[in-house]
Length: 90
Image 1 (tube, rainbow, N blue to C red):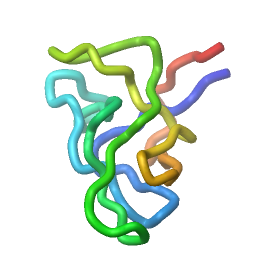
Image 2 (cartoon, rainbow, N blue to C red):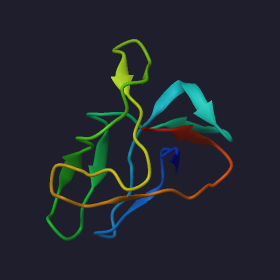
Image 3 (cartoon, rainbow, N blue to C red):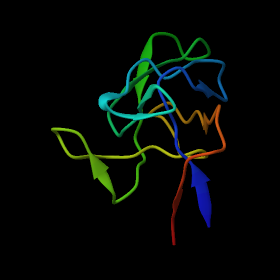
Image 4 (cartoon, rainbow, N blue to C red):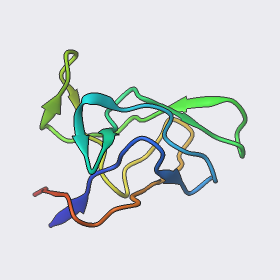
């Protein structure tokens, strides 16, 4: 199954957005979001973090890549804004 890669600025099901991504690893000009990257959450208030990611890692801290449908620490679902770059998951 192919899943769209989440990037900085992508939205969540709670109306928030991904606040940062790996600036050295970009997709279509935006940093790729990873496990532990912050997201805003207007529903829960404040900032949360991405808690799900792939076994494929990127960046200096080797964090898992966030994909569409994965969740944040408050249970929000990540929504990709692009459909051109995907990762195959089993």
